[in-house]
Length: 74
Image (cartoon, rainbow, N blue to C red):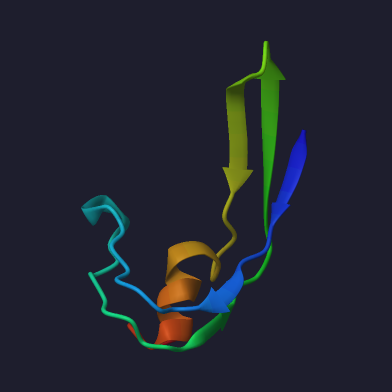
């Protein structure tokens, strides 16, 4: 199964990623986000995901989120 993930919304609550992602805890900014699409492939057996693969291109993912929220500069 192939999935395209496209995230858009408004930052209204505490942003609290796991520490290893490198995103600082950030209180709500009330800013809207519109992140680039990311693509993933999943394999499912017996109604369970048994494999996932995806590549987050440069400038996407947590870094793009932080840029759009003004947490880090582009």
